Image (tube, rainbow, N blue to C red; front, side, top):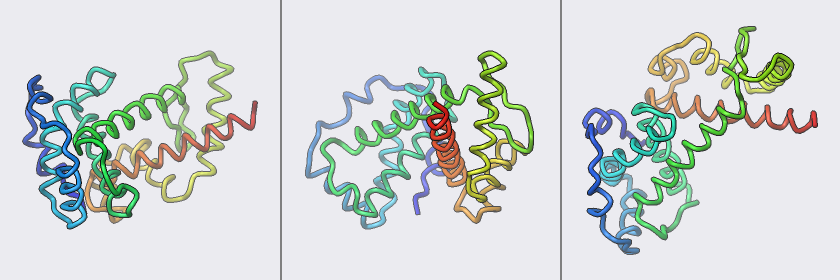
Length: 211
C-alpha cells in the first residue's frame, strides 16, 4: 500500500527552488532500474524521495495552469499511485528516464486531462435532480443536462453513490473512505477522479451517438 500524502504533504516546501532541476543527476539506467527494484520490494523510501523532489515542480506547473496547491498534491499523489500500480502488475518493467521525470510526465498528463474534462463538461455535475450550469446558451445547456442525466443513469451504482456523497452532499473525503472501506482520504479522492472519468467517457459516447 502506498502511503505518501500524510508523511510528505505536511512537510512540503512553501517556495519553489529553481535550483531543483539542476541538482537532479543525469539519467542513469542502472539507478532507475535499482529504483524500480526497490519499489517491487515494497520499500516506501523511493516514493517519499520522489515526492519530496517533485512536489515543488508539480505545484508550480499546476498553479500556472488554473490549479492550486491542493490540486498539485492530489495530482502528484494520483501519479504516484498510477505508477505504483503499473510497476507492481508488470506493465512498467523499465524506465528510459529518471523516475522523477517519468512521474512528472504522468502528473502533467493527469492535470491536463482534468482541465480538458472540465472544459468539455462545461457544467457542474448534477445529482438528485439538481440543475447543471453551462456557460453556453440555453439550448446547449438543456442538451448537456440531458446527456449528463443519461450518463449518470449508466454509471455503476458504486460510482453513483460516491459522486452523490462528494459532489452533491459535500461529504469529507475521510468519511467517504470509511464508507467505501478505502485506505484513506487520498484513495477516496483517486476513486472519485476515476468515477468522474467514467462519467465523462459515457457522456462522450452519448454525444457521439447524437451526431
